[in-house]
Length: 415
Image (cartoon, rainbow, N blue to C red; front, side):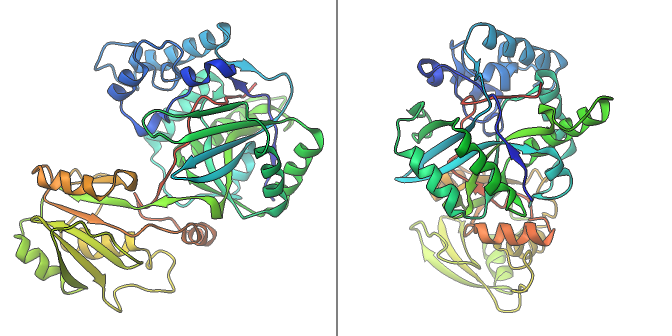
């Protein structure tokens, strides 16, 4: 059963939240973070992207950069830009995108639930990225940014959350860049906190939606602290890491599309002929065409859009992985025709989150930077849960969740 607890979060004062909050560390590069932070010394980028405090070109993995993160974290606390709540609390975090609002509960998730498989993942993690985030957690002795979980729909929790949603939030702002609304409430009523704890205890599993590397790093640091503490008794704060948990049905998963730098030596005509073996290929003209259903793809090639429908027998409907469009396209297009077998390491392919739209695919091909673009129908939350429950792993770059969690609304200290 899932074990969660409230915690004493560090939060910016209401009047400073819009100066402190930021996008997550992994959705922008160092130069973008430098530009967004500008001359704002209160920006969380100084902690989660501290290379911006060094000359341009300084590696984000430089040991001095991690030390600077810890130095800046202490500065934020000393200056009152982050202030710790006096008592343990749960928190509610709402995000509104295109008129749709999703409500998450901010909790301390139990490290052992991750290490023992009750917090389920659907993606592989890379050790180098895990190690980077582990160093960041270690040096700050804190989870600076939350991970993003899904949980099975729960009427009791939904009713509790909606009751708070009718009250005035502690934070309420529209973020720059994405233009989405973010709201935040504190749950400090003892009865309500017990209800949250009890309802999660009834859930057999939680599911990582986004933030696999942060989840792995946070859990591994917690497990490391358990091993290194001779007086460990299980009640320590490091036994938990910060997560925002959303009801599965509320989440929005967008398409995660591909752009290719070359056609593996083929002409456009030869590529279309090769595709016809496993797909029904239809020329849709010059107007942007978006996939309408599972097993349907759209391809932009030589200034034309094509509809590709996977032929019967090219996938196994009973296989939770084999039925995925990301697997079908990886096997039958990227690997078999274009000779791109490892999506994680190939320099011939790039990925475009669905929020940018298919116009971004067209732009990158028309510019000559890329030769072909492939748009996929979005994965469903049910598919993610089915795969996680089966113990299998999705192919890389399969899901794109929006809106992204803003960082800096609350921080979890490990001691």
